[in-house]
Image (cartoon, rainbow, N blue to C red; front, side, top):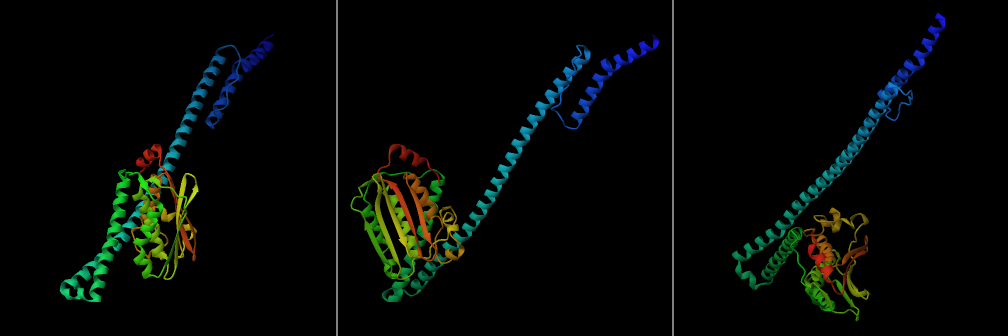
Length: 336
């Protein structure tokens, strides 16, 4: 009888007391190894079950806390990645801006030195103005002054755009009249380089209701680049036609050096020009096309480029025949 009682006590101790304790210890070891998904399944109907329930409740809290911590760490990692990308963008932007300032400083000094030099000669020898050489000096002064004025205007336009102070002035606009005026304004340069200019205007283009000044500025940039990059005895073609009943396209094509694919988007960015081998052949602020793209957006339109290196480029402007009130309001709010 004594032996049976001992055996019975042993069995009861193992099943009722030690087994639940061993299970809880095994769960605790799993938790220590990082497994928060495990739970106790003790169903003894006594204090051990209550202890197991409390243990499970604690694990639920730990798991929720771990998940919140994981989410917070993920958000922090994402934020750090975003900040890192932004820092890289800012670094690149500052680098480009620094290069631009160095280039524009050089571009300002070149015509300014020429103006001062020719003016000094004419001051010391005023009789030169009566001769061809003197008149050529005076023409160089005017050309240099115009270059400076164009670059200053680009910088002022950029500053006004970034400040959100660019405004639209809607008025009746004749595309043929505008295009013919631009061709006339470049006639001296095209004649000097013996460039043939062909102007093709469709008869069905209506009078536009748009900002004539901004359209003119965009086309001026297109034509200026075309004349700049077209070699002597090259060709420039200006075409204007309706793409549909609501939109007119004005395109300027040249037979210049063309633009490689890598540079085709770059040239529309602020402070950027195409590859240095191209910019060394030309002058300018590098802002004209960037400003043109934003002006086109203000006019509820767009600009684009098609180019083939060695054969030439075509820049085009698409604008609506009439700017609606919504488009005008949207355009006024645009900042470059």
